Length: 296
Image (cartoon, rainbow, N blue to C red; front, side, top):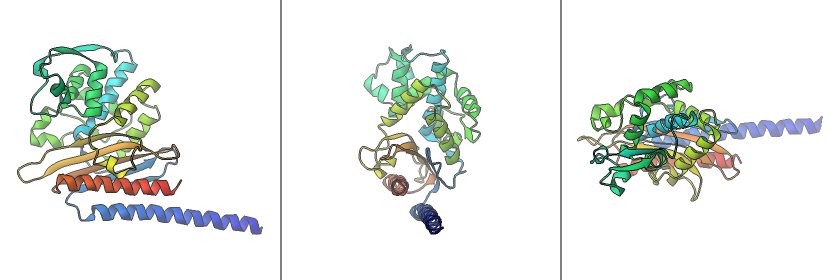
């Protein structure tokens, strides 16, 4: 009887400690974003332990280049179905490699007029956020409406894609492609669990996201060195009033014990400096990392 009472007390204490820690995480994040000139939405979920946290989780957030993850899912679904192949070649004309946009592919091959494999196009688009690669992939699969239909089919309703990267050169269009932190976390979880793509293509896309070269001072900066992070970033420029439409980072983080948590961070209508906005994302990530590590 005494032993059972002792175990009950230990269990109650552990529950109280965990709840308090969860509340502290929420408080920490709220303190990080409280005085910032931006609307911030955050969603966290432990893949294995199901622990969740949401702050402004239903924020209608402009995606920017985060939508390249959704596009890649749609492309790889067509690979799974035998419509496309990763080694399939596409002849890309010089005029398709538009200037005045972020495009490592154009920088490496400025004259175009050469074959690129689907694998190369995906690597440029997902790992290096190539805007030309993105729009070429959209043309290959039939446009934004194909992505809209496929993502909705996965049960993700809070998702809208209407314009490509070139069309987002118009300021008003930056607000058209939207999703929410909660919807993003749900999609990332389904992706990781192999509920969207086949095993091989899931592993392939996950690795492309691990190899992301963008946003090293964002989410990645809030994690210990060499932590595995499969993520996708997105950011807009600013207008004449120094308003930035959005800056986002979404990803799956591997913990020291091999478990994972998903973190979706969206910032909207920002008037902070770029460097300060990066620090917000890094600070939120560090707080979530510390919280999850303490539970190990």
